Amino acid sequence: MIRVLLAEDQAMVRGALAALLMLEGDIEIVAEVGRGDEVAAVARATKPDVALLDIEMPGLDGISAAAMLHAQMPTCRIVILTTFGRPGYLRQAMASGVVGFLLKDAPAAQLATAIRRVVAGERVVDPSLALAALSEGNNPLTERERAVLAAATDGASIAEIAATLILSEGTVRNYLSVAIQKLGAKNRIEAAHIAKQKGWL
Image (cartoon, rainbow, N blue to C red):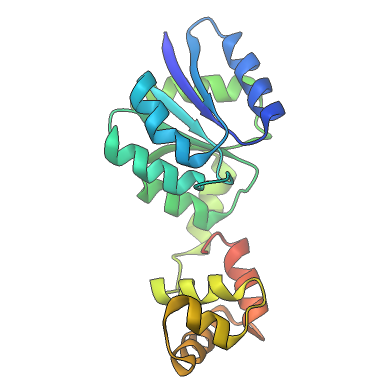
């Protein structure tokens, strides 16, 4: 039996996924969690072969949860199952030890097959997403530019961003200006939107 941990914050979706996977004769759901910050501890307790993670969860996002799980249990195969097919997410996920990346609108049979394939040592990535990630190229933003842009997404003022990140207002302006230029945006709101759409924030 393939032991699976399911991490998804929407109870109805989580229940539906569990029910579908349990119809497969060789897959057993050993744990279900609704928060990203519960993944590693529950995985250590239940020893799954595969962890199926959503990206957007409370407590900790799926990519950060994947990185933590991979560091603590490198033998557990991690698959991201998401609604958000953003190329930047795929790159971040692979860097975090993820071996599978599928979209939630994929057929249930495809998910079961993907679980079997990752257990067999393969990588499984949605083909359209892999193509988009290749054509998109690498994230041009530095860590600091990403942090400043992320802080700007909610419309925070320069002073608020500076206070949050413990930087001077001039430094914040410089980082924002460079990020806006790199992304070909008109302003920081548009730059943040572009970066978020590409999965770079």
